[in-house]
Image (cartoon, rainbow, N blue to C red):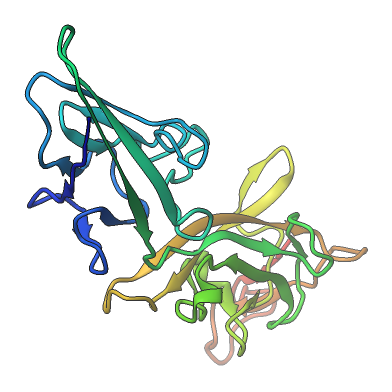
Length: 281
């Protein structure tokens, strides 16, 4: 004879009771950690074993998302092999589960029941932060001596929760800015030059691709159901500096004379001072 059971939430777990039918349903937040206890079979029979039902119409163990120990139901893993969350409200928010109880050998009877697992949505951090050049590519380069406000690249990012009505406003900021040579434009979505660049500057880094600066950019989503919690992503982008148009030789600057006075009646050919100048090249 089948014996129905109820599913109760264990105090202190990340799960909560589903208000419309708290005995047979559980709710927990997406992106939950692994090995979290979400529920207990309240009237499990001593010595019985319990397993998920894989019959049509049920989700079995949720493709490896859940497991049972004794009469307790756990979340199996938090992340898939590719690093993404196994529980994502935007892709799958409801699991229809069924559990079958099997008595010890030599004992008759059966026990079964079904319940729903609801994944609660939380505001996710923005992802896929990118800085792309004017043609949409990821290679970033700026010629030396171009004027301030010259475009370096356009900022983009993905907000998974945009369609849900919150978290759809992203804010960009530059958090790593060598020599304050870069800035955001008035829209806050473009990185532009704050000052002309010099191909021969001593603080430029270099690799096989040439000379470059590292610019760190942050995208922040301050919206969502948890006030005051900042959700963000940061990335470092290489901005290569190329020589200016030929000829690249630049005029000397900062001409100076080491002395500014001489005594009267000084003889001819007496040195007045030393000349100096700066060659940018």
